[in-house]
Length: 432
Image (cartoon, rainbow, N blue to C red; front, side):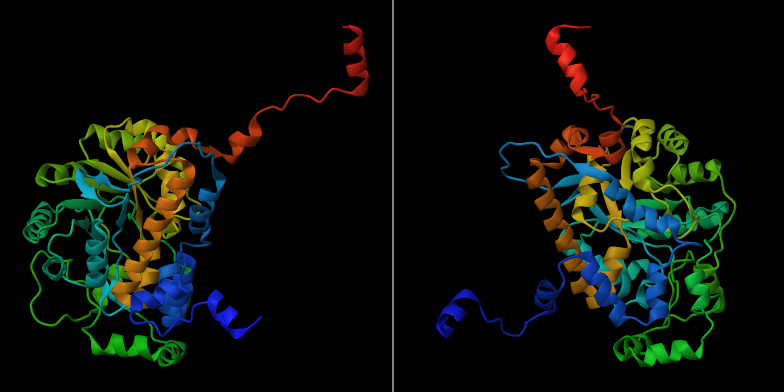
């Protein structure tokens, strides 16, 4: 073969002109983004993203449960395919939102603002954590037009509750995400081994890891201290500072005993939509619907709290039945592909949320990394729907259960008994 024949078969790529172009060439899945994030971050910081409670069985089950469901495509024309949908009554370009995550500037100096800007560009909602490292007002100023939701820890202090709600409302957040899965903090052993305690314990290994990741270390040292400016009712002034109490809140927990009456108090005081995050019991779904909440987020906190807990996909059919269409259902936990989102919607979910996947993107390449993750999800959802023979989210919800089957359904049905040769001979002779 001549050189001109070879060059005709292959195009010669020049250097990438942007971070987005580099990611297009190198990262084809969330798994690829995860590998890049692992290279960019010190091990202790990466483990904080990755880690789960105790033996991490819940975390593994979250991912594995999607593999228990198989697609059964239907044949037919697929034209004008669209992922567009509504979430909590507002528009979204796809049935996906970014779930709130704490300590986000640990992974990249741009932190929450980078993630929020990527969500705005992609046209999906963004949840800001109560334990975010950027003031809610700064995120709002940086992303006018973004559908912003605020993640709230329930409290039985009514005065503090009202003050926080006023601050959230004044900052322009349209919905609340209320945690109901954090009565205590999970036993995350990776963090203990790495010195992620309250306050953090700096070990010689931590210093070495930082030196081996100079880009991360320089970004960490050149910016404001990691702090949690949304814990108070007042807007913080001046540069942010970090204290042992702040780290204790993030890593050891500072959760008040609350019950349904405290959640009802939030419902009474907040005029916008409310999502209860952490529902996995059908009884709780029914109660939430009867109390007038707008949505539940079926979640086990990414496997970071109670270990050996049912995955969202394990309980989703029962949650859908209990909700009976009275509220929206959002699913998170273990989602790594657009096809996972399609499976959840086929089982009755209204939308999904991701946490770790976009944190991988953030750690790998800042805003461009989050944008790349969202683009991959959009492409994977579009491809999956086309191959299933579905053109819209509404059609997927309507016909979804006919397009998906659990492995137990495939193998539990009794198969016809195979006739022996003697039985066939008797049959041919008309002998009973």
